[in-house]
Image 1 (tube, rainbow, N blue to C red):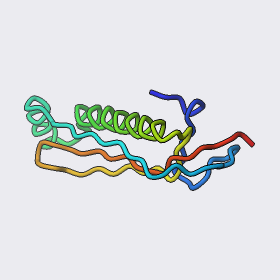
Image 2: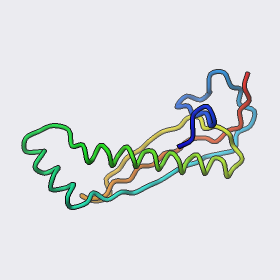
Image 3: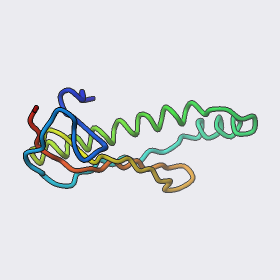
Length: 112
């Protein structure tokens, strides 16, 4: 995973302490994950009694990190050194698959 110090990222349209000197364009990172049968059975039992379904939390955290890494790679391919206006989106593709999309604007920044 890239450190925010190495590659600044912001959900706002700017990054405090940096000045945007060039906009490179729209970027995204995407991953689709499938919930395995074991996880679905465990989740089914957990849903009866209530509580957090840890297998799904772990899967979503890993998916988010993978999509973010892909977005950063896409930004670097465009020559950017930061991302602004970053957003995360999640969508169920089927009962066993989940999509995570990260998108934003790739920019070149300089420290102020």
